[in-house]
Image 1 (cartoon, rainbow, N blue to C red):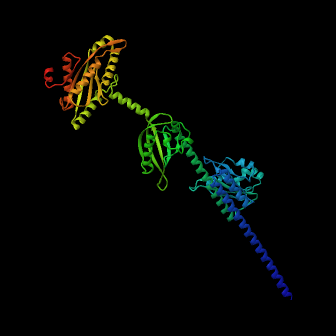
Image 2 (image 1 turned 180 degrees about the vertical axis):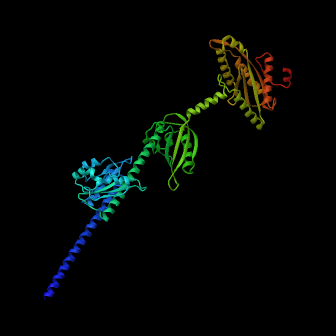
Image 3 (image 1 turned 30 degrees about the vertical axis):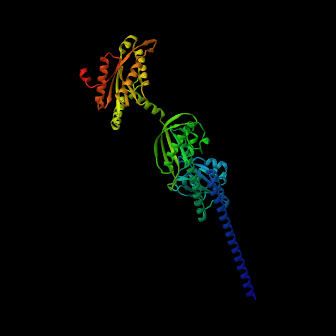
Length: 507
């Protein structure tokens, strides 16, 4: 009976111990599940903040609070390495006293500079189980005592390339040695902090890059824009906004028909489609009339396609430089090189070029053309009597009267002094040229009222017809010159058409 009683008592005792063991195990399982759930919630909270672009300080504080919520005995902080890589600044430490955070904010890293400074300098985890006895914390004894801290574990936060970005630190009120689970915790937390810091720095770098690019686009001396596949503006830099005399909101979403005349807009759209549909990069010179400002400008433009990662084109970028002033200078230089500065008639060089072209056309089409040499009579006495100023006025008026006698296709030129030449690129016969010559002669016989003086001059005109009087430029010029010599020899103030035998008479 006693044996049975003892057996029963022993069985009850074993059962009680078993129940206690089961309860403890269940409690640990429940606690573990709660911690796991809390950890998952905290991590999801951090990921949500990251996804919504929350400020770095908000994300780091959420990371710290998540750990402290899961492990209430821990006090955590995240310190960031400054841009110079020599000092730690506070990132998040909501559970630590302000005076403690202020004292640590800006400390210089180095071996022996507590746990955090040492870990940041070496890039290795640094565990101090008892702050009160560790030499690296000797200089901070009063501070840690006032804050009530007994242990500190410091884990470097490293980028993917291994660069130290900061420190994740865990404090305990009493001396404490980390378990394997706690080591994994600080490693995982440091990794999560690295994601947040890396994302923040990437975003900041993008912002700085965009700011730099915006500064360049807004201040560069070129017109820069983007258009979508329908030719609607997506972006216009400052210079283009000023050109359109419109703010960005009145440009984006509109095409060129709002800003240019229909022909200009149609031409620009045609070029745009070559970029957007065919993927060409165009280099073009455009002359555009802005219908909003009424100003016509000449642009040297580059248009190139913007592509997605798969190679498809989604927009074009245009860069245009205003070359209006340069074109005007070029035109002026061309005019100076090809036109007489006083009368603005073509000079000898340009006239020779037009004569060569006219001869080529006449030869190809089997047509006639006429060349006239014209020399003013009694011009020298005008210069001698009234001065060169009046003489110049006279030459300008002579040039105008000659032009008034000609067709638009004809060319009059001044080849020096008081000598002029006229090209009639298409005539039916030498008689037609003679009629034009008489018309010029009569025009120049009318008095010139200049600078308060009434001046009278005359002219001697020689005419040569291609191919009758010369089949080449050289022969034709010689024939016209000989005919003019005969006009002068025969009393001046007359028109002479070249005739065979004139050359012998003039010699």
